Every structure is written in C-alpha cells, then in structure tokens.
Amino acid sequence: MGLRVKSTNWVEEIKRQREEITEEIARELSNNYPDLFSGGTLSGEKRQEVEKIVRDTVYLRKDLQPGEHDEVINSIIGQMTGYGPLEPFFTNIGAEEITEVNVNPSADGKPKVFYIKNGEQLFAGNHYFRDNDELTRFCQKICEDIGRTFTDESPEVDAWMADGSRVNVTGFKMSPLGTSLSIRKSPLVRPPMPMPKLVDSETFPYFVMNLLIDLIVHGHANAGFFGRTDSGKTTFLRALCEYINKMERVIIGETSYEVSLPNHPNVINYVEVTIGGKQVKTMTDICKTILRNNPDRAIVGEIRGGEAVAASEIAESISSGFMTTGHAENVKDLRSRLPKMFAGGGMRLDKDMIDEQLRTMFDFLVFLDKDFSEKKTLMSIVEVTDEGYKTIIRFDEEEFNRTNGNTRRWIYENPVSRERLNRLAFRGANIKDEYREVHKTELYVDDE
Image 1 (cartoon, rainbow, N blue to C red):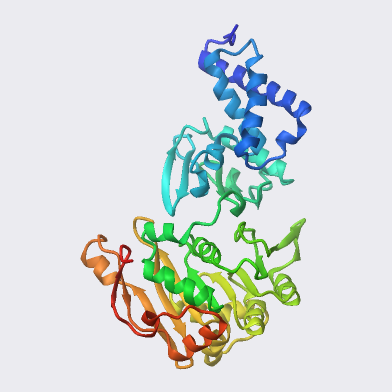
Image 2: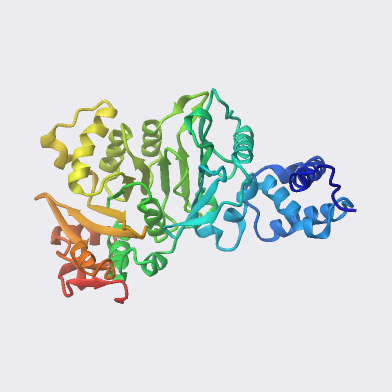
C-alpha cells in the first residue's frame, strides 16, 4: 500500500510517517525481544540473527514500499545498538579501525560528521542527521539510556555508552550553532592496532618497532608514552602490550576505559567511579589497589594530575614493567608539568628533585606527535640516565621540512647505555648488537 501523503509538504510528511512506522516496529520488537535493545555492537552470527528478526518483521508491514525497507531496518538496528544513524561507524567492515566519531553543528543547520580512522581525520558527510533538532533528540536518547539528562539546565554530558565508549554531548546555550557530539570508541569495539600496521602507516620504522619490543617489553622496562591529545599514545601502548607474555599478570588503571588487551588472558582493568557527580573511587585509590594486587606489569593510563604521585609509588615499588601515558611534547615540557601534577596530589616536588623523580619512575621516555596531515609520528625515544636524558632515536624534522614533508626519516643518535642493557638483559630483554652500537644512523620506514 505504501505511505499515504496527506500534506502539501509531501517530503516531510513521508519522513514523518516513516518515522512513526519505524517507532511502531521498534516498540513491537522491544516487547517481543527485550534483549535486542540492550545496546552495544553486533557482529558475526549475532548480527545476522538480529538482522533476520528485524528484516522479517519489517517485511510484514503493508504500509512500506519495498524501497523503504532498508532505511527502516538500518534505523531500527541503530536504535538497538544505541548508535542510531552513526551505527555504520561501529559495525561496518573496517569500523574496528575507526577510533573516534564527531558530529559538529554548522551555520546551515546540517550537522557534519567526521571520524578518525588509522590516525587520519576524515569527513563523512552531512546526511546523517536532517537538522540540529534531530541530532539533539538523538543525543538526549543516548543520555537517557545511560541515566543522564541533556537539557538547558544540563547542557553538557560526559559519560560512557553501554559498550564502554566515551561520549561527550554539548548543546543548548553552551553551543550557539547547535548540538555537538563526540564518541571515543571503546577499546572493546576496536582491537589493538598491530605494530607492523603502525610501521605501514609511517608512525615509526621497523628498527624502532623491534627495539621497543626487545627492550621495553621483553626487558620489563619502565616507560612513559607522552604526546598531545590524539597523538597516538594509547594506540601505541596497546599495540606494544600485545607482545607481553600471556602468563604475566597485568593490571591497568585509568580515568576512563581505553586500554583494553583482549588477547591477554591475565589482565584486570580498573577505572574511576563517579556516582551523582561525586568520585567514589579516584585514580589515587586505583593506584593503591594495583599495588595491593602485586602485578607483574602495571599500566596507568593518562597521568595528568594528582594521580602522578600514586603512579610514581607504583613505578618505584614494582621497579620493572611499569608503563603510563601523559601529555608532554618533550623532556622539557614533561619536567615543567611534573611539579604541577605532584602538587595536585598534595606533594611538593622541588625543581632540584624533578630529574631524580623521573629517574626513579622511568627507564625510557617515548614522545609522539602528529604532522600537518594528521599522520601520527614517533618523535623520539629518550633514555633516562643518572647523567641526564640521552636521545636514542629522533624524528628528523629538518629533513621533513627540507623536503616539504615528503621524507620521513629518523636519526639513530646514540646506543642504549651499557648499564641499561645489562639490567634489561637480566630481566629478559633480547639484546642485539645494533642496540649496543650504532651501525646505521639514518632510519626509514621501508628499512627491514
């Protein structure tokens, strides 16, 4: 029979009727199959099973034309997962390589969708939401599902979706052009990036990959991975952790759930707990819990404030296998930030004690950034020694500039110190001759 047009604005009337039918079918399915609307990703056999149930129900409707079936089916599946029109970014082929989805308001009233895939920011289009009102209703539904309200009185919501993705919604008077949405996908829906794939994307050369695995992972080195927002710190850390011995007990503490090691059978994740706007369990509490559980490896995600004090206690107590991430572009920047972080934890860190503190926490500092084309790049590996900070490998920014960004080259400046190699070998590192002595100064991605 098809949709019945009763309005002179036939396009809007058809859309309105289709939405009503979609809602009717969704309610019917929700009543008959309540578990389908529990949220989260659908994949493999489960997705096929759900699609069949939805498709069979939709095809029974006499008030839909054959050409309208797929749109209704996709809309209902979007409701089931909680992703709505953004569902393809979570479930389509290749979606596991997408780390973030952003929806921005615009002056023309058509929200624009962007996503980050393999470290590159891409424009998806402005056809996912008809207007700002539709985006606002979608965001209110997300917030309602997670027990939060998104209104004039609460114009910003920062929380987790059912699948563990971190969502930030901003609107009303706080965002003059309209509602904005940012979803940082849960590690549960995006497996760790393989290290060779990071080489293929020109984040670092093969030599660097092997050095990091042989020394930091197998040598149980204490390491910090630092860089600005979206420079690839967590991606880098997760990729490296895939080489940890599967029998080692790994405990991870974070403010939000980002570091997941799905292929590791002996791992525990802890995250901060906030109830009613009050923190019940802080990162400081989590760090103390990690110490009490005596892990072989401890990972503290994103130290940015007072938790640095508790994290330093873990690094000093475990003394091997401690890893963390944080915001700093280089050693100078990190030295400037550390006293402020310690002050946030109620401890004064005098300037003449900064280097001593970093020596007790780290064997290596790894710095990352992204260039003008959004390509994530390892900028340097620095060994923390008793004498100071020794750059082992650095990205050749001068050559990058000279060739207008066409040449990505790293300089192998210094070998790792003999004392450090001896200690790492004792812990299980795979010490190669090229780590003891620099044989080749210039390193490229294509070098094997």
